[in-house]
Image 1 (cartoon, rainbow, N blue to C red):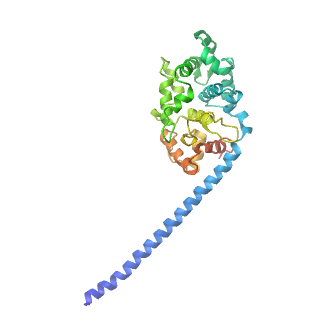
Image 2 (cartoon, rainbow, N blue to C red; image 1 turned 45 degrees about the horizontal axis):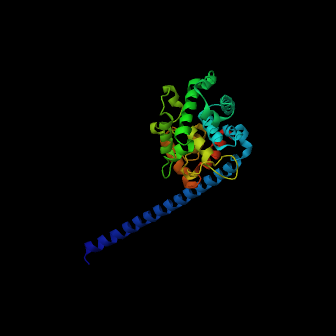
Length: 292
């Protein structure tokens, strides 16, 4: 070995060792950070599970809009009352419950019978009804659209279930919007039924679907619909659940859009693929009752 070879060899050894040390350190920190990340995720899941157990509770029914469909026992009465209540589901919860009950009272407190059998003149009783920006014109069209769905489309469950994707109800919500407005309708009423096709996270319809589809032993959600799986549901994303989700690192998108909903759904499904929207109880409860 000549002098140059010896010098070259002795110069490479420390450099090689140095690079190897750097690699080992990087692997250590990556592994350590990964373990910390997994532990943090486990901690968040445990935290949310505790809150689900707290708020997925019949004691909260009386002060929640789901109280309204709980006044009925017939499947069709429950789903119609639920849909109407969810459609009015923005603003003060006491006001939502009060005005939903008032709207259903205008239907003789028999939602399914009224939808099937009302005549045009029966809709005149809606005059004067208002909930925030939802007024009598909107209420009248809702009655006509629901009558069309139950008489000609097989009912609400069939309309939604017939368009569900393998892992998501979002395409079904867009399909429902199309069916709901398939009759001549006031343009103003379109804003009261969300359309994910236009980027909406469809909070109110996702809330309604949670009520109809989720089934557990707690007795809050109804679990009436058997052709949609709870794993396909999306979280009802609103200001409360969105803010809490961001604070917990479950959501990074700043505004409550469809893209934000997709990110939140992915986070919740990673914790419980079979029943991701049970965490809606935790997110909402933390935001509304605990000011998290």
